[in-house]
Amino acid sequence: MKEPRQVASIGMAITALGLLFLTRVDENTRIVTIVAILITLGLGFALFSSPNTNAIMSSVEKKYYGVASGMVGTMRSIGMMTSMAIAMTALAVFMGRVPVTPEVHPQFLMSMKAIFSVFVVLCFVGTFASLARGKVR
Image (tube, rainbow, N blue to C red; front, side):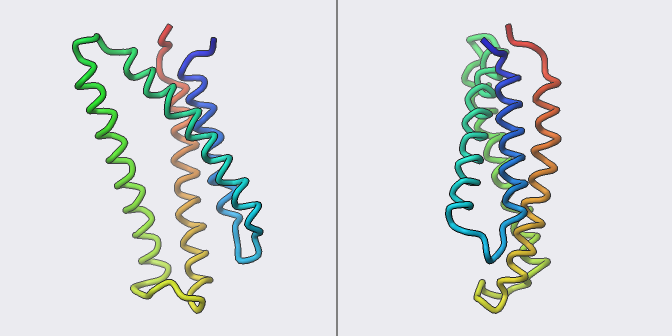
């Protein structure tokens, strides 16, 4: 059986690959391509999330399971909020305060590519951070 850090790192790398594919999406991208990319992202998230949580929970004593679980949830929420902050900042920089309409699709696509590029870099760094942690078994 593989170590959770290895499976989680593979999942993070697959997620980075899916995000990299999203940076190539444009107005001519077929829906089937987008679905394939989303499947890739889902696979990456699935391979990362469960082993990562397992590694975290396996590293604490039973009496601290509640605290560890709370910390995992808190870190997940902080990650989601940070992601939204990055996305909203890029949208504000590239588009300004305008609704998303066909007239601003080029700016929207530019901001989307910038957002996904930032997330590719973060996932790439996260892959190596995941590999660097100690063994569970």
